[in-house]
Length: 200
Ligand SMILES: [Fe+2]
Ligand SMILES: [Fe+2]
Image (cartoon, rainbow, N blue to C red; front, side):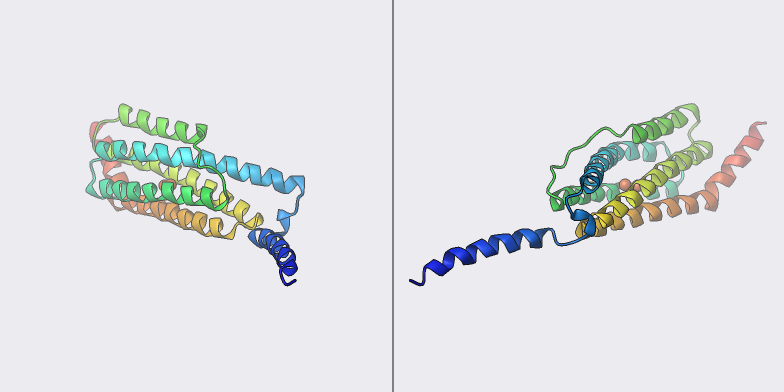
């Protein structure tokens, strides 16, 4: 007699759980624009996932080529941060229930290549250091633009936990950029211009 109630209870429960798991943002409605934005969000995540992984290999090469202690430390510190960012992206994929997949990021590949040619074309010392700083800052600015966009997408899609993680990485990229500026203005650029004068 009392058992008949159970069926309807579990039915209601399933429905409410489903609505609770997608509670946020107005865009989450089944519009094709929202679906399109979500696809773009996932594709961009795959892109930056590839980029961050590529950077874990590129940054050690930059540190090896650098002379200034400050610069070497800044790069090595950011390498550790970058490794954490890779795992943070894996968390984001998990949160939005997508498989963590890397998709080749042509832009980052180009920026890394540019850094490599600067290192080949310069002699080890302050000029190469200045080149490494320039190349690194282009990389950081690309990351800042990317994470800014990803954070905006996450916010629009109502993915609030993902948003927080992406914002954390965005702040780290901004910090890396200003640390590189500090290194550059503290000595490297100045020394580099002095060396050029000496060569003339
Ligand atoms: Fe990064
Ligand atoms: Fe970075």
